Image (cartoon, rainbow, N blue to C red):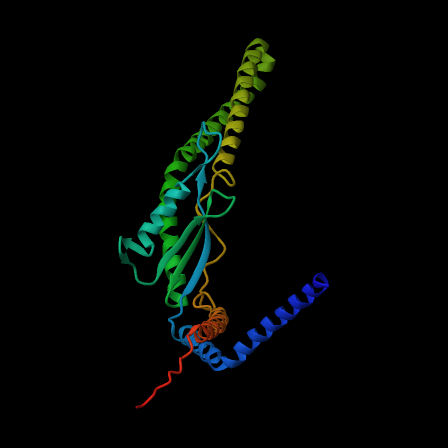
Length: 285
C-alpha cells in the first residue's frame, strides 16, 4: 500500500510547490512590476540618449608584382604589417591610456581565407565622418603603394622597351637581307645562300624576342601584377551601428523581469526565515 501511495504524495507535493511559486509571484507583483519598469526605463534612456556610432566598411586588396626569378608574385606590402601600421596610425589607441576621438579605424583584419585582402572598418560620430576617414586612409595606402608598384614595374617596362627597339632593328636587317638575297640570286647563288643563313639567324632572334616579350607582358599585367585597389565602394552608413535600440530594450525588459522575480523570492525567503515574536506574560504586582 505504501508503494502505491508514494507517487501520489509526490505529485501532490509538486502541485503545492507550483502553487506556492505562483502565489509568491502574485503577492510580490508590485515589486516585480517596479523592477521591470525601472530596468525598461533605464534601457529606453540609454537607447535614445546614448550618442549614436556609425561604421563604414570596405575591402582593400593589396597590390602585387611578379619579378624575374620569382615563382609567385610578391605583395607590395605584407598584409599583417599594413594592418598594424593602419591601426597604429589611425586606430583608437594613441598610446597606453590615451584614446583617439572619433573618427578612427576599429578594424583592419585579413579576410578569412584570403591573404591579400584587408577588411577595413571606420567608426565615427556621424555617417559622413566614418566614410570620410575610410576614404582618406584608402587613398593614403594607394598613394604609397603606387610608388612601390611603379618602382618594381619600371625594370620590366624598360626591358620591354629595349626589346621593342631591338625588334625594330632586326626587322630592318631582315628586310635589307631579303632585298639583297633577291639581287644575288641571279648573279651569285653562293653569296645568296650565305645571306639566307644569316637571315635565318635573324628570324630565330625575332622568335626568341617575341617569346620574351610575351612573358614580360604577362608578368606586368593582371592577375600576376596589379595595383592596390578597392573591392566595392565606400558609402556612408544609412543607420547607426550602436546602440542597437531594439536589442537594448529587449535585454532591459528581460533583465528587469528576471530581477523582479529574484527579489520577490528573496523577500519571501527572508520573511519566512524571520523568527516569530514571542509573547511574554507580564505580571504586575
